[in-house]
Structure formats: structure tokens, C-alpha cells
Length: 84
Image (spheres, rainbow, N blue to C red):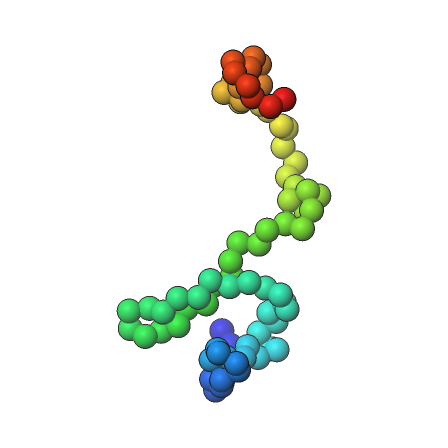
């Protein structure tokens, strides 16, 4: 576990704390930020949204199967003025 002391500073309308380069945080990483009951500040990486369909499925090696519910929905005929 890394330990480092940093100082908060004002930048525009925000108070900023820098993350040391030695923590190897990739630029552009998004975080969830919250303040704990005891005053601790908690920073957690947010779930990354893939940039492409290939990235989304890069580690998936399963077989795609359509659920019965989706199959029924796909086979439904329009009943009103739905757009097809």
C-alpha cells in the first residue's frame, strides 16, 4: 500500500488534490467520490463504459442465446401505430 502526503489547493471553483504519479492512475480515469461519516474522503474508480463493441466483448467467450422472453417480444405483431 502506497502512502503519500498531498496538499489541497484551490483551482477555479474546486478544491483539488493531486494523485502522485507513482500510484499509476491512468489519465482520464473517472471516480466516484464520497465523504464518509468520520470525515474520510473515499475515491473509487467508477465503472468504465467501453469505447467500442469490441472492447465490450473482448473477454467474453460464451455462446449468445436469446431468452424466451426476448424471442416472444421479437415475434409480436404491431397492435397500434408502432413505428417499425
